[in-house]
Length: 420
Image 1 (cartoon, rainbow, N blue to C red):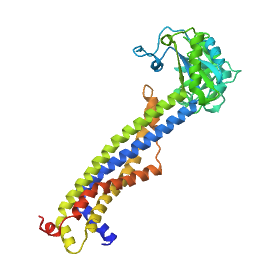
Image 2: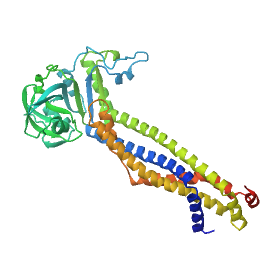
Image 3: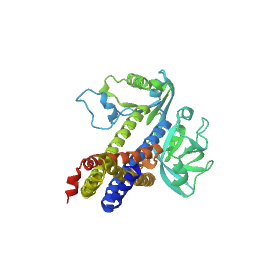
Image 4: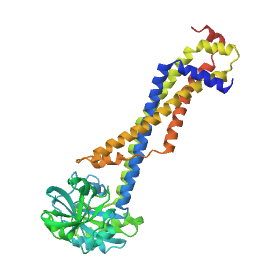
């Protein structure tokens, strides 16, 4: 039998069982669409996460006051602290900065303070997060991209660099470079605006000007940022910083530690691993839809074999071979996968775009979850992904149709002709 004839007969089977076939095709569309949507969104989120952490710098280490729960894994068994950090601990000071500077592989060390402050601009006001930095060290440590203007310089005192959202959305009128804003009653000149995504909701000012903010003590820092020379030995440097600070702060036992040291590269690895696990989990859920679709194809093919039993008998009686019957039903199941694959790819692309729009809308709102959902606001739809999903759909169709097609090809002509 010619292959064209086999395609014609397979199409007739598909066309004459419209409702059953299309219900089966819908199952494949849902499964392939779910896979394309989830994989594209997951890949986009992972790429966005890597980009953001790449901007943070793998060569940065952060020292925070209080012993965090994240560091408690080094404690002996049975000696766990259920709180996130110890209260009433000694703050970080210039003494700690000088201790860290004395270590090798240290490129720059900077103490930072963070506090809320009232900002006024053209008659409007609101509370904004402030970050005070050492302008000299900030030039070396800062990884944020400036879109307009410049970054803080060592000669700046009452100058500020603001985030993209503060400049464009926080007030009714946009704030431009060289404009003036009032922070806690003090006038500051805007010298720069960060690019979108770079500390969107923050204002960075020289640490010498943070005396205007409440709850900011002189020579005390909310955190210390360390930039290393060689990022290949970040873990070793992190350990050296812990040991040095324990010595300088007079801490003898691990359980008495009143500070935490974390490296960006460790956080990157943890988040990347988490994203990969989540992608696998979501992919497994989508795969269930494909399994259901495959079962639907098998059910449709078994029913088609039963309905076409007498026709199979006639074909065999007139000279059709087992391989001919097998080819017809395999092509029929492949057609179901083919149509389902096309529909699934279209639904998947539309679905990933819809998820991206929803995530973008959620990330612009305030409150918890905005930063998390922003990861899913970008998708990564590659030609390889679409081609794989399409071909996989056809393969699923063929695999699901093998057993029914084989059973059809093994029918004996006499038994098939007597079938009612």
